[in-house]
Amino acid sequence: MTAGDVLDANVDLKQPDERERRMRGRNRALLAVLLGLVALFYAITIVRLGGG
Amino acid sequence: MSELPSTALAPYAGAAVGDYVQILKPRVMSLVVFTGFVGLAVAPGHLHPILAMVAVLCIAVGAGASGAINMWYDRDIDAVMRRTAARPLPAGRMMPGEALGFGVVLAVGAVVVMALAVNSVAAQLLALTIGFYVFVYTMWLKRRTPQNIVIGGAAGALPPLIGWAAVTGDVGWGAVALFAIIFFWTPPHFWALSLYRAGEYAEAGVPMLPVVAGARETKRQMLIYTLMLWPATLAPWLLGVAGSIYGLCAGVLSLIFTGAAIRVWRDAGDRSARQMFAFSLLYLFLIFAVLLVDRSGGGLP
Image (tube, rainbow over all chains, first blue to last red; front, top):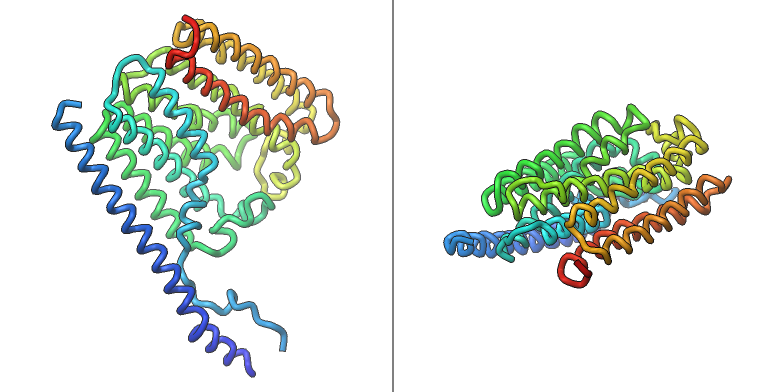
């Protein structure tokens, strides 16, 4: 087995899983942050409108 | 054929969520958030709980942003020091641009939200804190002078002022007293650490006081700053921001802290410096915790 074969196997089989796992984690975290910001700005707006 | 490390061949998979959390320096952030919250809680006046929560969140995000930009700038020396070599940037788990972009977006976001939701004075102080930590401490002082953490310590001392200003819209003498506590606490805290990490700092080219002036001079200055901490720590009681329970506790804690500095001064080894570093964290936490309890009605007038 050559180094090139190891590289191909590494890229084709192992790394896509790792990439997808990390991307999935980042996407979920981003979703949580965006939802949190929506809730935050909603709460700030309500308080500000109420003269808080 | 020798075994090839998979990470050496791998295409960059992007940083994990945990790495993004790590570059925010969550442990430093927790102390900043706590002192900022106490500044907010002891300030005279009233702030809607939601807006108070937003102010604390902005302080936390601003502190995290400063940490991220600091890690971006210091990635070269972080790689040299054992304590910091496993951080996401020197370990190769995150690209420098990711850290910088993340930090800048968080910094701008925190300041803008603080200005929109709370008030402009708190937002300006937050911007000053982030700017001071990044430009004055990280980029200018840290690698140039052994007074780096003395002057740069002002950035870490500003959060109670931000919390105070979030409530009052200005900076009162009570807030200045809280600033002074952290400002005079910072040198003995960091120099205790640098006493037993002097070799690593020297290797990284960071001119911490023990590297430049030696352990003896560092210990002398630690003791001086610990004594200068006394009036700062007692100031909230003298100014009427806190009651006699705080004054008593602050006196006892400062006595122990001074004792620790004397032990470091007399000790030729590292043990007492390690103990003082650990106690310094507890000391600051307890000072602000007692202030909070005292102010919220637990203490005597």
